[in-house]
Image 1 (cartoon, rainbow, N blue to C red):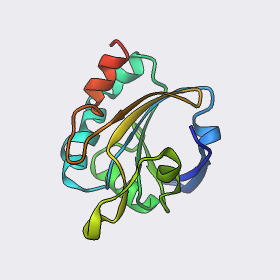
Image 2: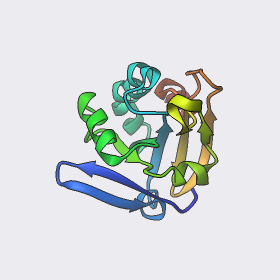
Image 3: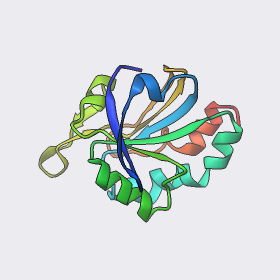
Length: 153
């Protein structure tokens, strides 16, 4: 996992995190989405992780994280609207530097601009062990169901 920074907003305020600290001594499934409140992200991607959060934890996952190039206020509001806060860490990649360091930043044109490519990663103690990249416009390999298959659950 590259060294980068991101933010997570809670009811207490906005906290800054480094990837070095967040991914240390734990097993994380992080999925990235092009944008909060966007159709596929809201109807399919985030709900798949909410539905299977318990199974992911039973499969040995300590944290579930959602990364998007948005600000922390938007990510918190999206998490709140989907009852994800407290279940999924809603990571705000404020300036896209985390996505860029991961090599998943993509320009989605005049409407969305620079965004994270839809994907999922399994991270063991800071080491990315699986990268599940979607083709543009697709949603299949980065679903929670597929991650569970990879985890053998």
